[in-house]
Amino acid sequence: MKVLFVDDEPIITQGLRVLIDWEAEGFSIAGSVQNGNEALGFLKKENVDLVLTDIRMPECSGLELLEKVKEGKISDAYFIIMSGYDDFNYAQQAMRMGCLDYILKPVDADELLKVVRKVKNLDDARREDEERRNRMEHAYLDRNMITRLIGTYDNGNSAKSVIICKDNLDGLTAAIEENSSDKIEKYVYAFYRETKEKGLSEEEVNFNISYLLFQLIHIASEQDDEVNHEEIMRFIGESSFEESIIKGSAYMCRFCKEYAEYVSQLRKSAARGILQDVEREIKAHYAENISLRELSQKFYLNSAYLGQIFKKKYGQSFKDYLTDFRIKEAARMLARTDLKIIRIAEDVGYKDSDYFVQKFIERMGCTPSKYRRDHREE
Image (tube, rainbow, N blue to C red):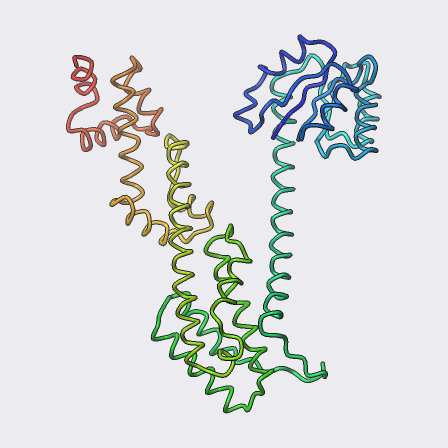
């Protein structure tokens, strides 16, 4: 997120730059300007997520700036007003005009951190809402795409229920998820047999296939939420089913097997991406009490599955990998710093120094003290 400072005193904007670690909070500093007019010009040219502005400035005050931005719909940035005690009534007015919060001058680092994190949390929630709406729009588009591909059954009588061969189609969906050729064939033939036994018309079969395709789109999206839905539909369209898939079980079998392989590739691709994310989490938080279960919840994966793909890639369990990483970091600190061993143990995630020494000996073949002596001598 980008932040803009607006204050007619340069010493204030310079202080704001260093008062907190903006980068660590997920922000970059877009710039600093001295009054509301300069800020308006800046906002018209640059995208900014947060404006931190003084309330009293020459030419154009913080209140006037806020009013002009809101009325002219110039920016969607969150506004935080900086004010003195004498400006409290102004601050209240700013809140009524859409300002998110205000902080008193001189600005306290803890107070600034509090409102900045409030902005970040609000923005995260807004982005989640946007993603949810996008997913709903995708679902709507998917239905329209299916309609364009094979049409939609409409018998002109809404009172009459449509027969869905649900058990066989759900079984087929599960078989495709498993990428099981034998099960795919079993459920495809069972589905076509059921349509004949129940005397379903071509339009009714068509409707059943729409039901199946929508389930298949959902499967692909679950493997990788970044996957392009147009790509999924293109894959389905290029499988050249249309009339033949409606009338022939052999064509349906071929399509389902190809789609199962496609989903398998998506799963492998997504797993590679997840493991990269897990690796980054370990590097960033190895000193904390992290677990495979917590990471699986964070990345919306089954913990057993995450453990399997982790071991397959790294040749060891998550727990062993984390221990190795911690011990390597400890070894680096032993060789390069004068920190006490008990402090190094804590810094790499071990509250029990005896347990740390035990793990260090297991991995490095010697005590931490000996490792430090040997590597200092080198």
